[in-house]
Length: 219
Image 1: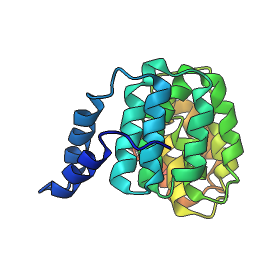
Image 2: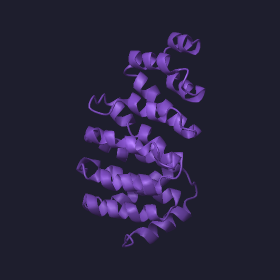
Image 3: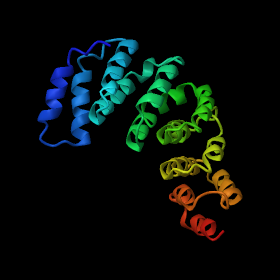
Image 4: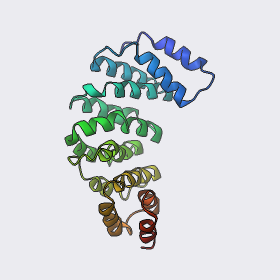
């Protein structure tokens, strides 16, 4: 895999940052993306893959940002590359959430039929991949996309997951879903509250009206 021409300069800029904060890293991403923005989607994804291969968190953040900047050029086949990234490069909740709530989530919204492939992730040995099965739906849910897989199908599959960050992940998905389909989520929680962990349950009801939260907590 060919090293991007700007890579050494990027590494130096990262090293020389006085304040190593996420906003400053995103500013660097914007700076270097400006120099390659006219390249094709395939070329940008190749650059991103090189950055992901380093395994360094900052470079992964920049890789995901580069991919997101090309979102209007995604095709349904882009999912195959993104799925490879999910399986190979997502190692923690921060990787998962950055990628799935931007580039991957946008792709799912563009091609909602892809959302049904998320079911294949719920048994992966990597908790970040299992969490991604839920968080990848957040953009589509917020945009009221009615063609995606029923979010409850994903939460049902993750219901008994042993990892607390997966529990938080699908609880977060239900919390967002409740902002648009409150009655549906309330009914679901009434039916499932004995099966759900309290962690996922609390996440799901966090943004609900206070009287609804009180009712559900009393169950």
